[in-house]
Image (cartoon, rainbow, N blue to C red; front, side):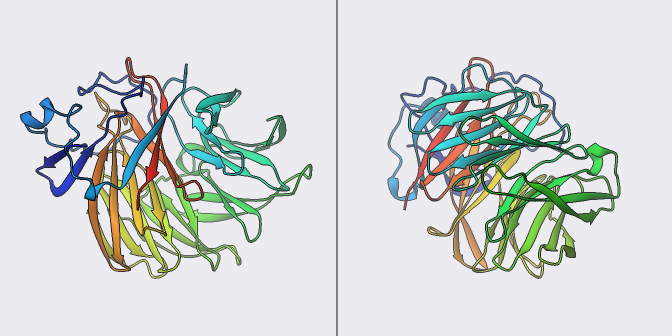
Length: 397
């Protein structure tokens, strides 16, 4: 480990190297392949350059003191042949399988986490967005794609069971375990609707039973928008962020009605996480790159802290009371941002501190925290000689 100082922050920076990682990046940023991007920030503020001494020893020193280490890279899983932008992930905890939406590759990658390899690549999508797995008596895999489909696959054979055709742009998927209802945002700007978007509701059925699309909820928007990440508290309050209109919506999922909405701080409010016990909502924005804490019931802003460039993942660990935010995806920029994980410590419900910044690889934006496995997964896309991979971190106490 290496301590590197950034003039933008007094927080120590952790530069990670996995010596056995065949797909690890070099110290220089490679030229980025321009992909199909749907969000281009109004401004991109690049991190200031590291000092010359730090660059010279970036991947060679192991001198950094361990007291600030929060995550440890334990595995790099290559994704051979997977090209372009990588989107969001789901997990099967029981069988230790990871599901990755490879958007530009038009596939859903099924990864064996124990073996560290790709089991299967499911084809037939147009810009795969997200994946959700429900095990037990359900044993179903749900996959959303930009072309207006929510597909359901059998969880072992991956045979297609159902295909719901809705308006374009179904995005993130969320299951309420209390009701087995599945929520997903869709419509909005990509569907040609500039003043509203929808939250679809699927009723999941066990086994061979057919799911039903039972309702939707309307999210009004003052300008063209796109619904993104979601979270639900113990009382059925559903929170959704809009990454284009930059609004946070609060729905009563039991009554299926909008309770309130409030403007997000900054542009590109695409990802969020929830501390249910303290009613605290953590939202990442891209311009400026920040992590903002809100009261999830009132919408009151509590605190804002610096975040990684081109943010694309926010997660809360209730055991360690830490928030993880990842960034580094390509968003219409000449080169990929450096990949980062920012780690924040929750001191109490109203006070937070940025305690470490861990460098990953360029093109590493989306992520998934799985508390049952104590693992943090980061999707890293192929850029130049860098092949696509899943970076696997262990969360440290």
